[in-house]
Length: 627
Image (cartoon, rainbow, N blue to C red):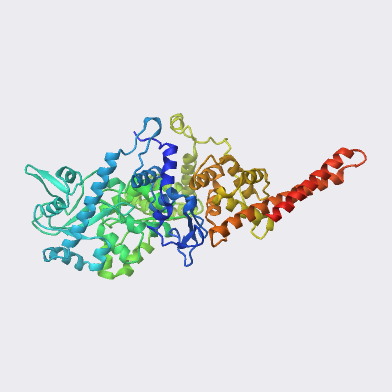
């Protein structure tokens, strides 16, 4: 049973993972001052580096796009994995054993080791197949690629290889690299018979199937020879690594472009993915021998950041009956997306690989550009089932089509498609509008008791959603606001530089900007309790309202203006003292106001007390200036 990873183990993973070492694998970082590094952001296009990393506090922040967080957040964003998957990945990297709440379990150490052995076997097998593609024995595979205008560079980019004819070429190679038969049985690269295991892929062109991180987890193989009695395409069977319903071919190459453009193009085969990418459609992926389903949608939604702020999913299908059936099956999943869904069907039935081969890359791009909304395709496909030359046929078609129009996500274009439907049916627009309106009202009807029992966590119509605090960005031109920000930067990045007296004075300070005040409150709530700098920043991130978590990361990575350790210490002390001087100025102003409101004759003792307090404040201010 899966369980929640214990908080102390998550903290240990953060503490023992070098964020710079991890990010170095994705971003070229250069020094940006004492303990600070910067580079080009991997989450958006930019020419000047605005992506900053501070290893000491375990945080990153991009001043261009606002992405920020710790090492776990970075890997989640770059690999589009879940929180638990990312923590488990980092724990395995650092040799940390994780523990789970409520008796739950995660991957055992032996399972983690076995998984790594399987990944190693796939990597070595991929290298073997790629080498074989360059040999004379792979002439049929080379011809297959050449006929489809895929050169050696394209084959290398997609990792295409060749499985030699015979029964044990790959088997001998992997045995020679130290793999035992029990391990090899688990890879899915081999079949088993009466005489033991043998190569599953023989005399076939091979495509490596990779997960979103780029690790090879399976293979797809295309038949090349007439005497091959197997299917046209043969994939790895289900294994510990490979679950076909959870894999999209090409996602490792497409993920950055998908995230950037907010578009994902779903095609039907390996060569179609290759043709799309080589034609400038770098968002293309394909399912691996199965229909596009719920698990694929989860992957796509993570990549698209499917949150209602845009994005599109484009399905390409052959123009034949099977292609239309696949498109309608995809439409059944449409409501699981917030993004708009489209379908691109070539009238002649040509797939992207055929188009590129016969008409060039421009034809592939034109196919995607001419996409149609998936609901339009579904409506027209449904109309073909009725005789629209009869009144009965038109009424039946309206009953089937009106719920589709009612389900269009963009309510602004729904009336336009109601008019289109009226034209396709040859019916009065008002009749169609009434049918669509009735379908919309049915969609909005309260759920039954059974449905609400399953969704008891959902807010009822009269429930009020909790207010989300809104924080405007503090004005950097305001001297007070700038002073507050600089003080928070020091406290987040260099907490060890504050003396106990300075900490107490900081806790007592008042911050004027609401965002700064919220971070100040979070610092007080987090406490220190001997935490490491990275744990300290993460504790503050957890204490602030959600809209300010990115702001905390920004404060934690903003380079402090110091070129040496000594200069850094002087800067920190100077900033904290200036903050206290500002606070003293506020307190003096309050005392002066109180003094002016008093009657010295009516309350001489109170008048003298406030004068003494004013003197003490002035002495404290002068002492700060002498530090």
